[in-house]
Length: 154
Image (cartoon, rainbow, N blue to C red):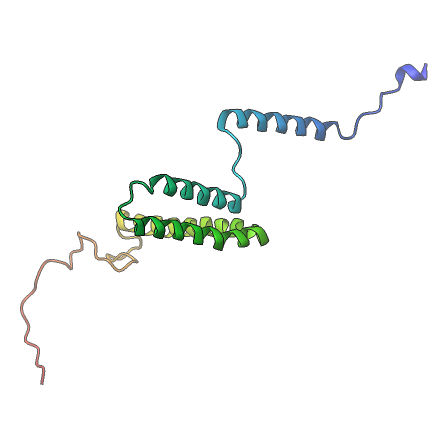
């Protein structure tokens, strides 16, 4: 009778396994819908350089003059040869640079949005002058030119 009342042992990792299966199914669904996920920033840079080199080589017949063709090819090859060793030795550098660029862009957006808000909403404190130093168009002190005044320069 004790066998009938005993609970079966629960799999301790059942929740983790179910979550992993769901995650893999979602990743597969997204791959079919959106294509493969992008690689690291270094891999993406390598793909970009290869695509530019392929495009430049296809355009070489339309570039005027042999000097322009060789200059463009040389420039692309120099860029590839400069970037390849860095990607090979330290691929995480480009990930860090991409993250830093994103942070700088976010900081710039925040600063610009703050200035735009002040410019479009007028004064922000109780005085007639906004904090950014620009006069408001409805400022009573700005009534045009006043009486002329002689300034002695001696």
